Length: 187
Image (cartoon, rainbow, N blue to C red; front, side, top):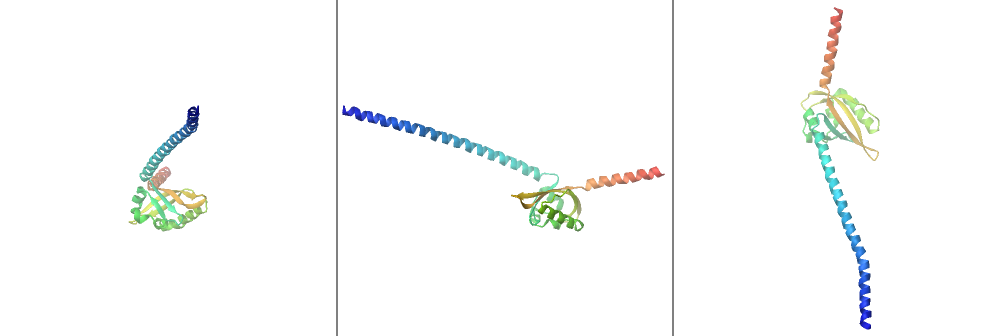
């Protein structure tokens, strides 16, 4: 009969729609779940990265040595708390100023030359300098620097300045004791 043909057509059409929509619904659910998993992964990694950055920042800020960065023109772009304490400057007084202004005159030429070597990619070993604090006090430092590059282009340097006053005092004391021993042996 005529009404059965029409019913069979509806059933066939419903079946076709079901065959098409079920896989599409499955794919949509799969995409939503995958997107959620990816989002959670990025979100979690972002939190971990932020935590690591905060830990690194705290480590640098609370270090016992002065830590600094200098740009391509030789201007301070960063100085940690210890570095600012040593030099006696506030952050806004120091950041943006040329590094050579805090180097004692007798060390300035060598320090500028070491900066130029870094600009050209030449290696620079640790070296000693004397810096002048805001109130004019001279402090001996051992500097250890590293070149900052981006895509092979010189961007500046970062470094650590360690006070060597104590080390010098120990060396002078040892030297004095050795001289005293030698004098005692001669007597």
